[in-house]
Length: 275
Ligand SMILES: [Fe+2]
Ligand SMILES: [Fe+2]
Image (cartoon, rainbow, N blue to C red; front, side, top):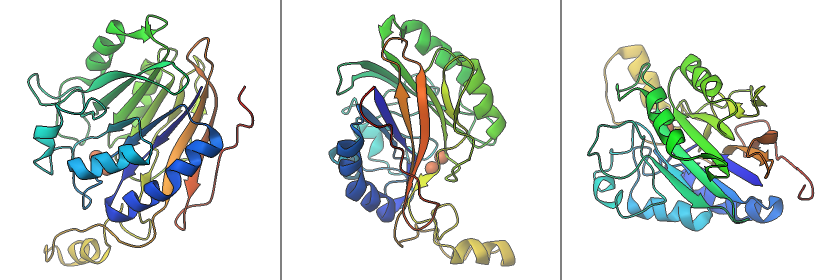
């Protein structure tokens, strides 16, 4: 089984590059399941129903989010209506939407996706380790699902790596989101879990983490906010991670980064014929 995870989609540039490239990538590489983090899809802050549906129409099987999930207030009302939409699972009880769900991949496999948020330098939600433990004890590989994807949305590399080792052997993929900068540490851990500290963003990399760079520069040098942050609108770059999963064990066999666009060194994983 082949899985693709795309990092935080930022604004119009991010949406355009995903809409333009994802359908062809799915066809070329026969991805069975695609997860896209969409927390910055609407103008860089949050996600509307329309932008959520655009990601689904481009080929996302599940859209995860993070700390920006409620920036567009309408997400509070559509979160309950769309089971392919996830917000971090460790929000307080009673929060709209869901933080985990099981989906059918194109090859028939059942994939559990859990969206969880870290606590370090982030709004303090419930313990992310307890939250994923609860989800995995309700649905584990071989006992309720055939593969597990964890979107660990966090600022601190250490916390994301800790989560990966905590789940090594229990998840197909633990992947970091939120920093909008891809790390060079994609690998398979000893227990068989694929991991990358941060998958980066889909958006305009000629920017400060996807935002038009004039205002960040002004604020840094004058200490006076003078305009709103807005997404950079230049050509977008797609950044993701492809994982080949052993159908028998649900664990990772191969892992490689995907980067297409002007802002990053190019990479397009080729796992060859289905194996
Ligand atoms: Fe983000
Ligand atoms: Fe975030």
